[in-house]
Length: 405
Image 1 (cartoon, rainbow, N blue to C red):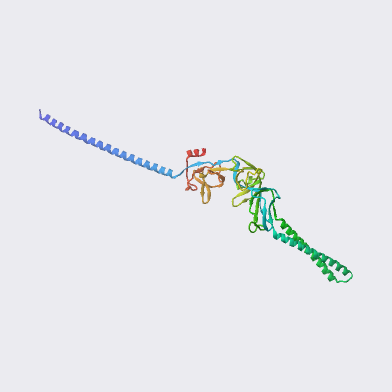
Image 2: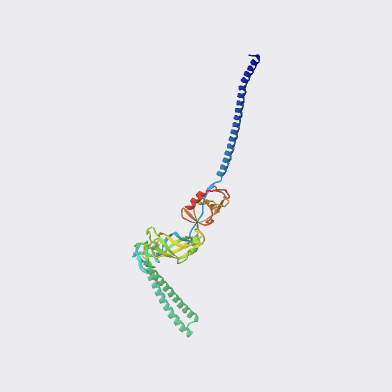
């Protein structure tokens, strides 16, 4: 082998030893570049995800800051309505009976529950003082009559003597004056006798009209005082039961519909299923400022006496109501210091608080007399924190469900 060949072999060997070193360095460089690229990509991706999450969170927070509400529409009611109101039954005529003279009860003839006719004797009163005064008054009348006869005779005699100038005119006038005084005394005595005779006639207590005795406050021997003063003031209570008066307080809203002659009927719990027909006879023609109601009277026939005065009843009035009538659930109304309000969503999705005029309370629902229309979007279950002009979101699914109920 020549020297030249030996030199080439060594160079090839050295080149071969350097070649793997260059390949390893390039591989490491590629790996480093890839790692840096992956890191940069990962950082970009992470940054982008975080930014997206922040934007999503901000949007969700902003969305949640706007309350979501469900809405309903007020329900329209028919103008023809049967109004059911509480009422009290009263006797058509009811009167306490008092004594018109002083004395003691001798006996009574009627007790509670007794049906009496007009002019029937109820009780008799013993009046010894009045009897004595009447005898004395009659004696005084006789005395006055005797004095009048003497005065009359004397006046006639003096008048004849005056014609012959036997007596003076002064004496004749005095006799005429005595005659006039005697006539006045007799008239006064007769008036006193008639007064005492009338008082004595009051010892018999009669029924002023036909009806039923509802109270008896006396017994035999009880001291009776004339009029409504003193003890045992009231002797009897008498009531006329056919027909009965039914008084009802009609709300101001229905007052224009109340007309005399309109039909009505009452019902009582003790007579389930029975209707007692009657008619409106009159009303007060004035609204009570304390209750804003119209006092109305309905007369109900009671020929069999089934209905009792003082009973509680419910009266049914069929009437026509002018204007629109709307109802809302109670949980759609806000009761605040300034009055009843309802929250309505306008076309821009903002809250408008409208004042309401409330009519009857049906329990779950209430009647709205003014403040709403049937097209208003009323928020159901409004939060107390809702304010005028606040932005809200409407949940249409609940809206449909609420409207279908």
